[in-house]
Image (cartoon, rainbow over all chains, first blue to last red; front, side, top):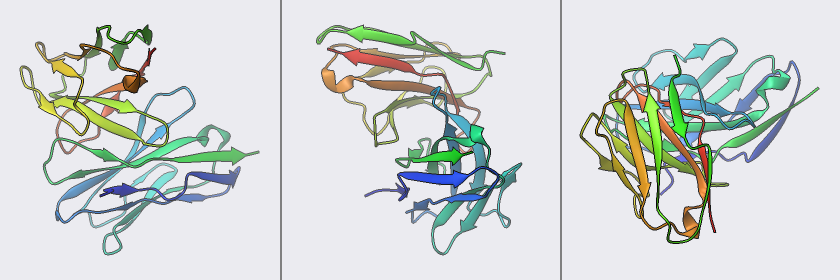
Length: 114
Length: 112
């Protein structure tokens, strides 16, 4: 069964607008961590933001914020004031409990239009 | 501070050939991982290590072996390459199991 689901294969956003990338997850473990990574066309994987299941507040890192809705098991990434350099693949990932492995979603390709 | 480096960047193999991919990290991280990335499938974990001298299987371990003889290095071996192993391989390291992973630049492997 899919642990991490990203339902948007591709998204478009106008420069300077905000965009939300969806991520839903499936786990029965009360302790888990959720991560978002960016993969530009150059290929490297860049860590963006982390949310722990017990964190009371939504995580934020600069223009990135995570809309964490625990009951709905969703962890959407919000990018504010999109820039052309935000065009990339974005991956959601989850680590359950104190497992040592991490599962990734299939990714969403974001294109920022000028 | 180089972070995570991978050697080689690109390789072409014939079916049945063997090769070793090298991953090195200079961040003193305990945990290291090998993933493969295929179109439309995100990243899948092949093997990982939680410390020097340890290795464990991930989601797709068949056809691969690994070794972690030194803390800073994690080797991925293909004993008899198959076309199904054509992929981009990423190495990552992490200071702990609940912390973010930091990735290398990837190795593109083509098996003919």
